[in-house]
Amino acid sequence: MSDVGSSSITVPEGFTLHTENTSHILISSKEEAFLNPVQEFNRDLSVACIRVWSEELNREKEAKWKQAQERRAKREAGGEAETGQQKKAKTESTELSNDPGDGLPGDVPTTGSTSEGNKREILYRPHKFVLLEALSATGLRSIRYAKEIPLVRFVIANDLSASATAAMKRNVELNGLGPSSDPADSTPLPDRGKVRINEGDACALMYNHRTEKTRVDVIDLDPYGTAAPFIDGAVQCVNDGGLLCVTCTDLSVLATTNYHEKCFSNYGGIPVKAEYCHEAALRLVLNTLSTSAGRYGRYIEPLLCLSIDFYVRLFVRVHSAPIEVKKIASKTAIYYICQGCQSFYQQPLGRIVEKVHERTGNANLQFKTQAGPPVPQKCTECGSALHVAGPMWSGPLHNNSFISQVLEHLESNQDKYGTAVRMKGMLTVANEELHVPFYFTPSRIAGFFHSVCPPLDDVASALLNAGHTVSRSHASPGSLKTGATRQDVHDIFRSWVKKHPVRMDKVSETSLARQLLAKEAREEANFTRHPRSVTQASKVKLVRYQQNPAPNWGPGMKADSGTKRKREEENE
Picture (cartoon, rainbow, N blue to C red):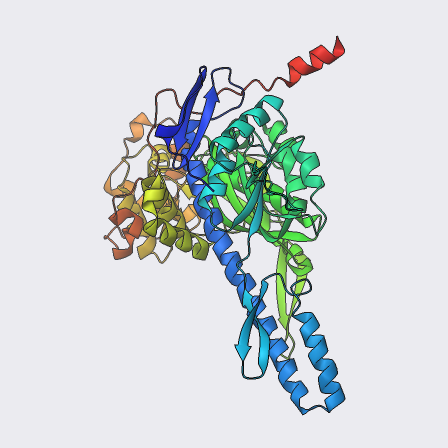
């Protein structure tokens, strides 16, 4: 693989050179394919996460390979006590099993000299994986994957647009990742290149890879808008233990109730209209992934799910296990959201009862339906009406062990990522985040009470002093997540109002503040500074939340694919 320096590249007329890390692409002035430079953070994060996942997968494969080798060695050692004829048959069988064609995927036979003569020694070969980017556009993401992730075998870069695939081919050749053009290469299997371009429908391509032998290890879905149409194919064509990387940019559908009917048709759930709507968007997409995988006896393991700028980005492992599929209902919930104070009430769809057998000590799981509803028709805090949201994922959003590995990788490779500072900040916050729904901001709660807003550390300290857990949330600046109920949070603000009184003559008789203040706090809050109110993310000066990277930034205009023009020409 050759690395081309930007200074040695000749830029044709009508094109501009775009460089990101060690990858270079030519962008046409005709807007053949879509590229958003602001998404560099998304691409940097994806490279780091896929690289860490691939190293973890390789360790798992190596551990299984070593166990198989140990079992093989024990069988061979047990054969030494057998008769001559049995021993001969055993030896022949072992030699056949060591053949490179029949061996385990990680086996590499090499010859080593021993006292008994020539005997082949089997060494482990690192597992190389195949990555499919279903919607590649310019191919920049696929090129970066091929160049920056060592364990990539090859990348399949697909796009439906002919102009996009032409741009991809140009950019792949520019980076030296295309098929071998050596005329002297007469091998029966010529080098097809590390980035292999395919022009076609993304769903059809993924359905063609859903058989066990043709599955791929990583699928990246980064569409313009929603990823919903591609999820069913993706969960079928990814290998067991494989990685799904999903981006959805349609937050106007996912993070507000303006288009709740569209959200339901795309994601099978109703969105939330509250300050924590961006976390709810993540949970709606996770529920779509979970239920789609469950239809095929598979389940998901969220590794890292982030709400970033104008989109959500999810990294999820897919496994096959019938017992885990049965647990999906207990990780799914409907939420009743108060239209006034934004309190939420969780209604799980299922529950699990664990029974231990007295004699054997084995634990048996029983799957039960869940009683409900958890709340009357009106909010118990302020008496406002409730609206229903979900169903959505109620389990963890992140895997802390995985995030810690990504942070370790980032620490030793900061020079390889242009957005390393922001990556470190957001990953640090996500790693500390509690595995509970949803977050709140003290400023919003103070607004409900018409009171002065208490400092963030004071609210966190009061919750900690009351015995609750507290963390920040990556999704919103100045936010907190806690294991306490919303009633507990409101009691803290009622205690705060006693020390910082509200002018009731300025509060309407029918206002939300009067309803909340009509209740007394069940116990007085202790605002004494708690040592754990300052987290690791707070101590270090990190770029936890993105500042505007450029004027007029955000989702770019969709590129003209040319498919409409092609259809019109065919009709003529």
